[in-house]
Amino acid sequence: MTAQPTPSHTPRKPYLKVAAFLALYIIVWSILPAFLASSVALDVSEGINWGSEWQWGYYKHPPLSSWVLYSFYQLFGHIGPYLLSQLCVLLTLHLVYRLGKTVFDQATAILGSVLTLAVVYYVYPSLEFNHNVAQFPIWAGLSLVFYQAITRERLSDWLWLGVLGGLGMLTKYSVAFLLIPMALYLLLPSQWHQLKRVGPWAALALMVALFAPHVYWLATHDWLPFSYASGRSHDVKEGADFLSRHTSWLGFFVAQLVAHIPLLALFLINRKSLFTPNAYRGQLTSVKPNIKLLWYIWVAPMALLVVLSLVFGIGLRDMWGMPMWALSGLLVASFIKPEFFAIANRRMQRGLVIWLGIATALSMVYVGAGDYLRHKPSRMQWPEQAIADHAAQTWQSYSSCPLDSVSGDRWLGALIAMNTGFPSQMITGPASHSPWMTAERLRTHGTLVVKESDADIELPLLDKVVSEGELIKHQGQWQIAWRDGEIAPLIIDWTLYVPKNCQTAQDTL
Image (cartoon, rainbow, N blue to C red; front, side, top):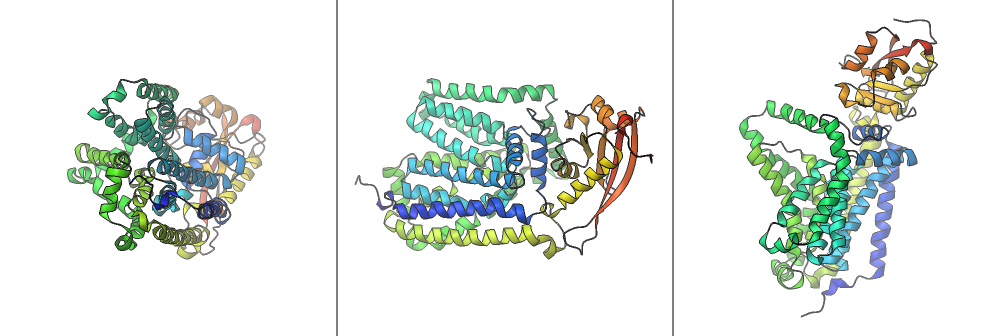
């Protein structure tokens, strides 16, 4: 039988309903959190301030995510980070839809695309734009173009693979967990003919060209992100025995399974009447043989991480799995028996709406009132604007020069910088972590140092300049109220180092 199954014809009205629902969902998740939260999340504040320096790399990560985040913050203010996250989610759904339409039919592609939202990572964690969220469309896009490159063997697909691979590596190095399995796939005997053509090599050359400026930055900045990652890994391993180091994949696997619970629930609720193994095997052998390639793309990164954990004892972090599961919903949709597709489609979309409604309500309550309910503020409930206002007023009270830099605690400094015209940030730790700061800059402009009371900070570059005696020092404390009045006030210690030519106040220490 050569005719396409029933779901290949998608009525326009249901398609428009899906589009309208997604538009409403994206708008709510883009705008509402900006009004409910009193502060951005930690990774957001850090990324915005990194991006304002326009470097080819930062001590934790490559630069692309921070550049885009800073740009969105400049354009849209506090709505910008939330909007950017949801655009990443929406672009991911679109790319999954395009892949689904290539492998299956339009109806399966639409359902498989929206079912991506039944994986928890694409919902609540997307409130905090970070390098993992930035990878969402990268992984989905790489899956699409790699599938097309293998099945169509067109040079344009390989070139797109090179572009997305290069941009992915400029976003976060963990994109390699997808690129490596793709490279290994080309080593299969059935794919050797690909290596005799220009496509894969052109993709590699383009990827290297895009990534090269960051590699140069790494070489001239002591390979800082790798030193940082090695230090964190050492901290984890120090307290772990041999067995726990080599079985960290178990916890990682469980975390990924938990993230799939809503999707698994939708699958299991409908399993008896809507899914049969025979229908699925029929797709494997007669409808779309290349679905095996989709399964490879989906499972290979997880398999690679398991091997790294088992063999090398690498500690896996749960959040590394965030961008890995863009194809989960599409693969679930592929199980549906064609003659039952219409009813399965309705039931699954209805269940998805219920899940997203519950997730949205709980997320917005947590962001808007979590501190009142728990009497303990999360990062998104800090008094961001009040902290920044205190900093600006204190600096202006003692200095006639603009605030050029904020030093010390990376969280407090980031909140101040992003709300006071983006002075640079010099964070606690080695001077190499803030390469835009120099001794001459500190001598000329001074700095504001902030930290939570009793916290320890390390600023070797500032200590060197202060020892020269060219800056005037002022100290004090801010007491800042929380939204929840039952929580004791936030105590922040501040120290100003003001150049003599900028000094306006008389009391010095």
